Length: 248
Image (cartoon, rainbow, N blue to C red):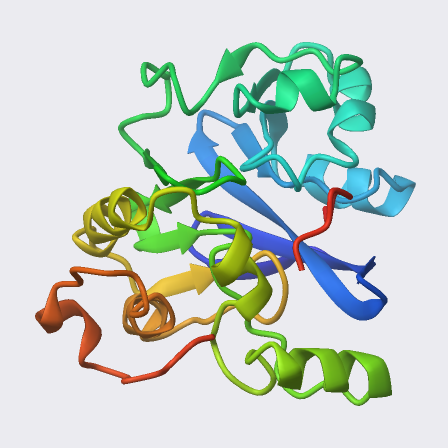
């Protein structure tokens, strides 16, 4: 069900399996004005989901934020051929079947830049770009941090405990160990992100965070070197597998 998160921001969730865990993936919808919509990390195109999105406006932009959240982008692109497809350059090799109109980690000129700030995360092997939606001070991320709560499924509970993200806003230890090619470069990108004004935080897996999202993100990524202390002291969290399969 498409749910309102903030002014001009909606989200929907659907079930996914990642290394056997039962999780959810999140799709975000942003209002770009003049009836246009940006769909970030689209979920399966069901008749109900399509109708709910079209009730909000016209799909003009389709956004794969990294090299993992792209599984259903193709079906939305076929259903809305006039929508522009944005994805990281690295996705072109993984998805030769997918039409990509723009590489968001290379080409920064975009029509919606007045409303949405794009921040590519350097040194992160998933090639993620974070969006900050200015009208309602909301950041949209995917695999930089999780907020899955306390799932009851035994394997999900066991794995997330072992990887340090059960019941906390954190990043899986497996991603921490394997997904950063340059931690200092990633830190610089994160500091740019934390320098933006935002309160709400939508994550790729787990519940969105309507308040103190910036502080939660800062705490979860405090393990990266050379952090700015003023940005990281608010929550003091110590956040903590890297699969080739897409997660959304």
